Length: 400
Image (cartoon, rainbow, N blue to C red):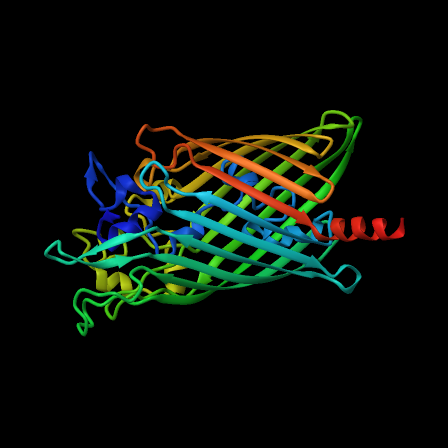
C-alpha cells in the first residue's frame, strides 16, 4: 500500500510532477492547467501513442472514437471492436492501469453510423490519511467514462460527428475521516460532456500511386464541472484539437504518412489576468469554482498573465510518422512537446503493428526526455477485430 493522501493520487494522474503547486521560477510562474478526470487526456491506444499521442487527422482505425469519430465514415470496414491496455506511471507505482474498449458500426447506404467506447482508469490501492497523518482506511480510486457517437459523411471527402459522454470519478470510495462534516467530506463526482468533430480526407493521384491529404478538427469534453465536496468544483479537460496528415506512396507496397497535431486545453488558468486580485493574479479556490464551464472555455484563450506568448505555450504539440508495407506491417515514431511551465511532458515514442485479415495488433513504447519523467518506459497494447471480416470468413467456410 502507498501511504499518500488522496489528493496526491489525483495529482499523480496528471503527470505534472513538477507543477503540483504553482511556484515562481526565475521570472516565470508554473501555471499548468490541472483538471478533474485527467485520465481523459491519456492516449488510450498504441497506434496513436506510437506517433506522439496524436490521432485527430490520422487515417481511420478502430480507436477513432477517442480521437475523432468522424473518421469512422472513411473506415475500410463497416464494423469493428478494439481493446486497449496501458500500465500507467510504472516508474512511480505498480498498480495504476488504463483500459479502453471501443467499437463502431457503419450503416452504409442508410447513411452514417454509430460508435461507442468505455474508459476505465484505476489508481491502485491508496491508504487514506487524515490531517494528523493517521490512516483511516484504504481506497481504490477510479474514474470511468462511457460515450456514444453518431457520424456521417457530409460530402465525398468530408465527414462530421457528435458524441455524448458520461463521466464518473470516485477518489475515496465514500470513506471520509470526518463523517458528517460537509466541509471535509468527499463524494464521487459525475457530469456529462459532448464532442463535435470534423474530418476531411481527399485522394491525389501521383505517378507512384494514390496519396491522401487529411485534416481533422475536434472540440472534446464540452460539459459541466465536477464537484467532489460542497465547496469547490473542478473543470473537466475540455480541449480543441487540430491536425493534418499526408500519406505519400513510395511505390505499390510502401507508404509513408506524416502527421502533425496541436492540442489547446479549454480550461482557465489559476494564475489569470482576469483574477479579482490583480496583485497576485491568482484565483482563490472559491473564485475559481464560481467560474462556469462556458465562461472558462472562452476565457481560456486570453487569460494567461503572460499574454499571447503564454497562451501559445499552452498548446501541446505532437508530430509522428508511420511507415507501412502493403498496409499490413507498420513502424511508427513520434514526438510530444509541452512547455516547461505548463507541465513539461516531453517524450519520444515508438510503435509497431500489423494488420492481417480480421485482426489488428499494435504496441507502443514511450521514452521520456528527462530522467525524472514518470512517463518513461510506458507501453501500450491494442488489439482490434474487423467484425465484417469475421462474418465473411464464417460465410466462406459455410459455403465450402
